[in-house]
Image (tube, rainbow, N blue to C red):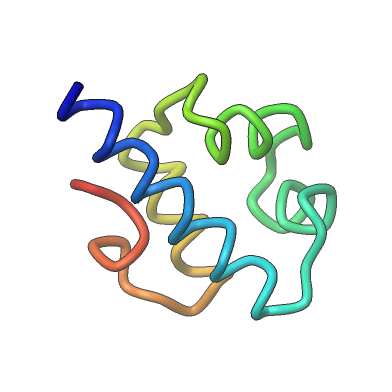
Length: 71
């Protein structure tokens, strides 16, 4: 149960940062170098990004990775 709550918090932070930046999932995916479905899966908790993908997402969203993800 605790794991689900943590994942939800990560998902909420990631989506909020993306929306505040004015990006769609597609736009974020293009800038990160992945597919839109991968961003969707991360935001819904169906996928966990590796360290490199976390770094690229954080860079595009101009946030430290620790603010977006439970590292």
